[in-house]
Amino acid sequence: MTRHDLVVIGAGPGGYVAALRAAQLGLDVACIEKEPQLGGTCGRVGCIPSKALLESSDLYWEAKTRFGTHGVKLPSVGLDLAQMLRRKDEIVAGLGQGVAGLFKKNKVTRYLGLGRLLGPGSVSVAGPQGELRLEAKHVILATGSISAPLPGVELESGPDARVGTSTEALAWPSVPEHLVVIGAGVIGLELGSVWARLGARVSVLEYLDRILPGMDADLAREAQRVLAKQGLEFHLGSRVTGARSAPGGRAVVEVQGREPVDCDRVLLAVGRAPNTQGLGLAEAGVAQDRRGSVLVDERFATNVAGVYAIGDLIRGPMLAHKAEEEGIACVEGIVTGHGHVNYDAIPSVVYTAPEIASVGHSEEDLTAAGIPFRKGVFPFQANGRARALGHTEGRVKVLAHRDTDRVLGVHILGPRAGDLIAECAAAIEFGASSEDLARTCHAHPTLAEVVKEAALAVDGRALHI
Ligand code: FAD
Ligand code: NAD
Image (tube, rainbow, N blue to C red; front, side, top):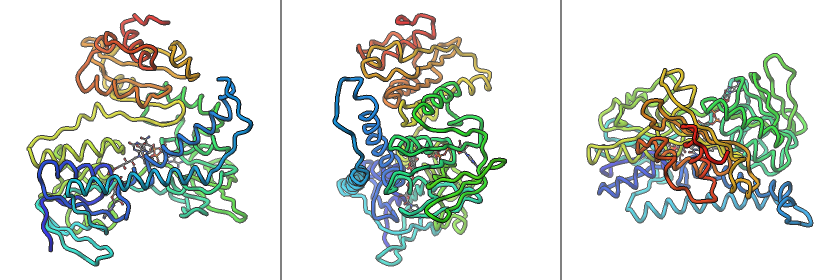
């Protein structure tokens, strides 16, 4: 039996960041991860590989469709998919090694194997070394999430899988002829965009009458229009009831009230579910809600003494940076008694082209809550830098309280929206007013000037329109 101050189960962005922060604060920390590679879903089969493919496929698409408008002539543009996938794999491997290096530098002990909670302060690890027992005053559960199944959809795995999840769609060895995406959420739009840019026909089947539920409704509608122009076919109000592979390398997708759809690949992307497999929660008496999320209080403590949970395993948006903030706040709460996450200032980004980013409340939220607000909107079309880039689609929407002018939400559809939203998150975090944003000097010519102009528009004073 080995003793540590803190044992973290799971080395995704929540777990590994919690481990690093705890080590900085002087704890003797161990982290258990069942996969040989550190970094979690995000590093291995999520954020990072998907962004690598989004960047590569965007370059391919730009080279094929837009270089000519810049006066750049290429004899021909070809696709080397194997190289594109290799590059993605190298980035993933490099980041995993980076986390291993950070563990070493911060003296975090790493255990390879499946972690299991045995009770307060007691954990087992089953790995290549056999079964080990660890004792710790504090345990943080950070086992993340897995792709949610859909009844009737028969998932396969590996490169030949005709019906798969995002993990398979990040590694298909050839471009599908016809890809059916089930779910017009974040994964469906990002990976649908990748394969559409590389030449696949992509049909997106969505149960609701809109894409991206939860995002600003206006911008989601505009995003749908832009993505449809790029070739994504949207079928809203389509409830998928089944999908399976068919002879001859085909697959079939069943949709309520419609003819079955024939295709050669299916991506199931209808959400993710907390990953509690083999974690021993029931035996240890850890309370969960009906969806399987571990129940925690505001300090991330579960109902079992000394056991905490963070990230995708608990309530809230399933985002890497949210998991990281919770890991830090949880550890700081344990060591210093203070830890804090501002859930109103967590940005969310969809990495399509253009990107879609938001932070804070949407118009729909504010209206439903009866909070009075003023709105300022400014289009990228009227911005010099956007014109120079040749990316003028979309706009910025700033929402501020009608009486106090405090910024309550910002929603952006446009080039580099994911980078522009950082300023808006900082504004919300610091309790800024739209007047503060509007009076901040923004460099010219930059895309960020659209944020300033939208803030000016809250007071009806936008200049360049
Ligand atoms: P995870 O990253 O899931 O890590 C949990 C770790 O625990 C895993 O490594 C797992 O192997 C390990 N584990 C599980 N059970 C055990 C056990 N019993 N013992 C030992 N180890 C165990 N979010 C963003 O913010 N931006 C993005 O661009 C983005 N893109 C995404 C793209 C895709 C395709 C997917 C699937 C997700 C994406 N996400 C993105 C979501 C993001 O990956 C998650 O929100 C984030 O990884 C959650 O972090 P976590 O630490 O809670 O869990
Ligand atoms: P999601 O919740 O974003 O979208 C799922 C979609 O599937 C919804 O629109 C839903 O209405 C639809 N759906 C559900 N059942 C259906 C059915 N039977 N037929 C047709 N449509 C159906 O889920 P996701 O795209 O799988 O992503 C999972 C999580 O991963 C998200 O919570 C997201 O936070 C995270 N993620 C984030 C990023 C990012 O931050 N850029 C990228 C990828 C994933």
